[in-house]
Structures are given as structure tokens and as C-alpha cells.
Length: 228
Image (cartoon, rainbow, N blue to C red; front, side, top):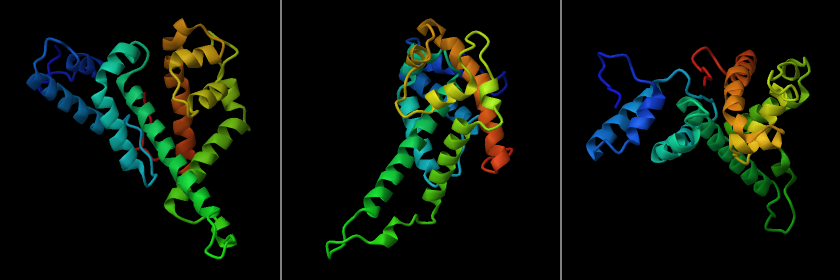
């Protein structure tokens, strides 16, 4: 078991996740390890951050899922992703769910009938609130990925699989189906056994591109580090 003494070098987050799932721990020891892991995640500079008004709710839901399902990470993803990448992926998924709920709610409001049986054309105008701003940011991100005007994404080519570049991988990874890396490999015509390699390539080459875009647009600052 990894030690959590503040006088020692902090253990790797992967090792903490392994410790938390170890049969060698009793209930009290497991609680201590999980609490320490939780604090490490919250204080990490690699934690995915967002200015979306529902970020705190999405973060809470993502962390609740991750820490209630540590065995899932250990059994399925520990050889494919770092712990922070796994947590960040869940934060992004929850943010997308909140975004889609907001969008669906807005659409329902747009087409809700008036008491007179007609439709209010004013409701078709987008409200200038923070939630719509977040939707606009997300749409702008996806437009940037798909357009790739300077060809930076298309030119970031995977050496092992030259038919894969940052653009097509970002489009597939940021889809809403929460597909595993094995499924993504199949969709991109790669052997599923290469899931670990593709996930690592994504972390090393796609995350920095997302970070650079966010900082260039002013949506991220130096403290909003997107890491792996």
C-alpha cells in the first residue's frame, strides 16, 4: 500500500486508486485513502475547469461518480488513462449533459404555445444569459475543430496511424455517446488493442491544442490548466 504521509513524496494518483480498491485495506483505511485522493484531485492544476454557470454542479456529479466507481477505473482504464484524464473526461461529459439540458429547455420554451393558441416570436430570440454564453462557447469550439482553418489539427498526425489526426480524434472523442477507447479505435479503423496508445496520443497532442484555443479565446487563464 502507498503511504500518504505528508513527509514522503506524494504517491501517484493511479497508486492511490489501486490502494483504495485493495482487499488488504479495512473500511477505515479505505476511507482515509479515498479522502486523500479526493483532496489531491481537487487541488490538482490538471483538473478541468470551466466558466460555465453549471460547472460546480457538473464537477460534483462527476466526482461523485468517479469516487463511487473507483473499481471501474482500476479494472478498465488504469492501463489506458491517467487518473486525472479519466476524471476530466467525466467532468466534460457532465458539462455536455448540462449544456444539452439547457439547450433542450430553451427549445421547449421557444416553441411553447401561448394561452391564445399562438406562438410568441420574442421567445425565439436567444436570451443573453450565462447559460447561453456557455452554449455559444461550446458551439464555437466545435466549429473551430471542424473548420480547422489553419490546418493545425489536420497536420497533427498520429505516427502509428497516419490516417488519424487531431481533428478527427477530437470530433470522435467529444461526441455524446461516451464511447470507450476500444470503441473509438474500432470507429477509426484501429485495432482495439491500440486503445492505450491512442488515449495517450490524445492526452499528449490533443489536450494542449484545446488548452491553447481556450487561452487564445480568453476562456482559460494560466490557472485553468487542462492536463492529462
